[in-house]
Length: 106
Image (cartoon, rainbow, N blue to C red; front, side, top):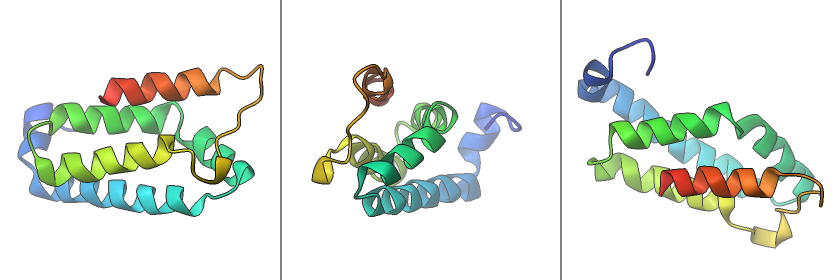
C-alpha cells in the first residue's frame, strides 16, 4: 500500500485479490490456533504492524463487499474467544490493545 499511491492501489484488481486471499488465509490460520500458546504466537506476530494493514485495507476498499466481508470475518475470528484461547496475563495490556484494533476496524 505504501509503495503505490492510494488511488493507483485502489484501482489495482490484482492487489485487491491478494488482499482478499490474505484475509482468508489469515482467518484459516487463526481458526487453527485453538490453544492459548498458539494464539499468543499469532497475536504477537499480528500486533501491531499487521493489524494496522488490515485497517488500511478496509479504509482503502471500504465500499467493496468482496473485500470487506473476508476482512471483517478475519477480524471477528481474531477476537473470538473459541476454546478459551484468549487468556492474556493479568499485567498484560494485550486485551486492551486487541480491543483497540478491533474497534478501529469497526
